[in-house]
Every structure is written in structure tokens, then in C-alpha cells.
Amino acid sequence: MWVEKYRPETLSEYRGASNEKEELKEWAEDWEQGDGAVLLHGQAGTGKTSLVEALANELGYELVETNASDVRTKKKLKTELKEATRQASFFGGQKIILIDEVDGMSGNSDRGGVKEISTIVDESRFPIVMTANDAYDNSIRTLRNKAKLIKLDSVHTNSIAAHLREILDAEGIEYEDGAVKRIARSAGGQMRSAINDLEAAATGQEKLEVDDLEAISGRDTQQDIFQALKIIFKTTTASTAEDATNNLDEDPDTFLQWVRENIPREYERSKDTAEAYDWISKADLFNGRIRRRQNWKLLKYLYKFSTVGVALSKDQKYSGYTRYQYPSKIKKLGSSRASRKRMESLTSKMSEKLHVSRKEARNSLPLFAILIEENEDLIEQFEFDEDEVELIEKFS
Image (cartoon, rainbow, N blue to C red; front, top):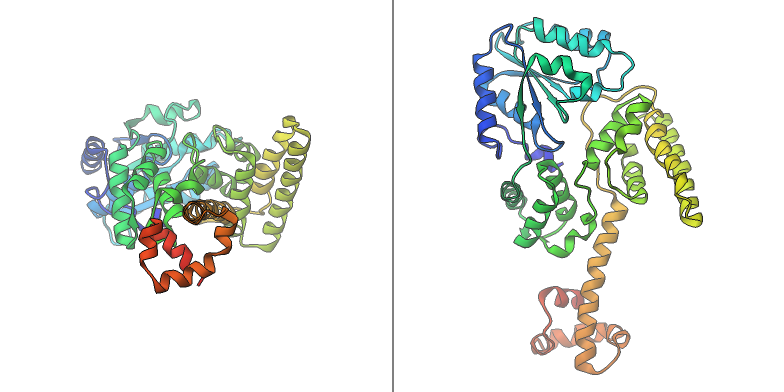
């Protein structure tokens, strides 16, 4: 995914947050054992994890990364994290420890997890950076009280747009600047969301145009759909999975498409995949009942089946990063809408010039394709643009 391909490798490549970058770098360079940790916080998609990775690269530190929402229990934290904070790096150099999404531990029945992280912070021989969307979640109060807080604000629209242009240039894709600006504005200050939207709209295109954005026009700005998918697919806790759709302003049909599309990308075992799709079919059944009866009280079952049902379908969590895909069905619908608009524009011009109906104009396109080959002056006479000429040529 482009979000990984174009992840900043150094602090100079990381866009925005100039003061915060410098503050974090100075803290890491001056850190001594007993100095505590940093709690880097801000809304999803602002680049918290990317900033720590860029910092490690710039300083030449080994990065040890753990996601707290996946490693929840005291026992697992001891096994997977504590030793890393005590042992020197493989080559004897400096380390930086990243504990992602510590606020994702809220709602966990094993409260020992937060206490264990607190102990790890006290005893660590290396600097620790924790990240959270909400630094003031009561469940992580202990961690907040012993950490230096650095907040990452939303990324400025101009910074997002500039980075999107760089990506398109690197991919060799031409673009209308209005399309880039629209994606940047609609991202709600989230660089990750903007890049994901750009990839969804521009993949397979020679040129990105405003019309290509129809497939992503309904994206959510309150909570990133990719974050919701990550919660569902990476947890085995019912309460956490159910929380995945909190503040997610996505219609049920679209949400089901997202989950359905990405089940096989996450679940490798056939048993897990089959059970997950069984829950999706149940959710789809309730979706149909809601539409037919206009009984929106049933919506809670749709979301329970598609979040909790899918999450608990796996016997155990899958480790590693998963590249979630924009729903192909929605993308195709968006592309077909753009194609229909071009066809409407083309047949309207022909209808007006030839004094025939648009249906007759469309039926005459094979003939028109031959006529244009023999007499290119027709293009100027009918005021066809490049896209319309290309569409006509498909009928030859």
C-alpha cells in the first residue's frame, strides 16, 4: 500500500509538526534511565507511529515495536516486551521502544497490563515512546502521569496536498490539482487517510481527475475505516470489537463491503475465513430486513455480527501488518458513474448537433468512430474533448 511505500524514513521527510519533531528528538538524545517515557497523542492518522519510526532511523537506533491493543495481559507484556527493554540491541547500539495504542487497552478484563507497562517504563534501560489517540482516557491515567506528553495536531491541508503530489509524481500519474486538493481537504487532517483515498482513486489511472473521486466521496472524517478494520481483525475480545464502529459515520451497506472485502486478506486459515463469512451473511440478512421493513432497531444485530462475530471467528490473532483493500465493488460503481457521465456528455453533444435523440446518438457511435478516423475536423465541429474522443474510439 502507498501508505507503507511512502512512509517517511527521516524526520526531514516527515511533513509538519516541526516543533514536536524537535522536542521528541531532543528528549530521545538526552534520555537517561529513570527519565520516564513520552506519550505521543493525537487523532488517528496524524502520523504518530511514522514519526517514531522516522526518529529511530535518523538517530540510528534499533526500533522495538509492540501494539498494546494486541498484547494486553501482564504475562504477554513480560514475555514480549520486558526483555526487550533490558537487553542491548543485537549490535550493541541504542534502542527506542515503541508501545503503540496504549489507550486500546481500555475495556480489557486483565487490568494488570497497564500496571506492567508502568513498571516497564520505570525499569527500562532504553527510551520508551507510547502512542494514544486519547491521552486522557482514564484507563491509562497511571501511564500519563509518568510520561512527557507531546501532542500531534491534525496535518495541515497544504502539507497533505504537497505529499500527495509527490506520490503521484513518483507513480507517474498525471493529475488535476483540484482532485488532489479535494482529497487533502476531505481527509480531516489525517495524512494516512488521504494517502489511502489517493491510492483508491488513482490506482490503474493514467490521470487522476475530479470525477475519479466519486468512489471515495462518502469517506468518514470522524474515524478512519482502516482503523476500524484493524480493531475488528486484530482483536479476540468482544467488547473491543464492538467498539470498532463507535464514531464511525459509515452506512451499513458500505461497512459490510469493507469487512467482506478484507476477511481473506487477514484470515489465513480456511476455518476462520468460513466462520467470518458466515457471520457476514447473517449481518447481510438483517441488512435486507432493515431495508424491507424500515426497522432500524435491527441495526444493532448487523453491527454485532459484522464486528464481534467476525472478530471471534479466528482461533487466535494473526500477527504482522495486513494491507486492507478498498472494496472493489464500491470502486467499480464509482468508476461506472464517471463513465456514465462521460457518455451522457458525449451523446448530448451529438444529439444537439444531429437533431436526434440521445439513444439514437449512442446507437450511431460505431459509425461515428469510423467517420472521425476519416475526418478529424468532426472533433472540433462537435466540440468533443479528449475523453469523449477516446470513448468514441472504443466503438471502432
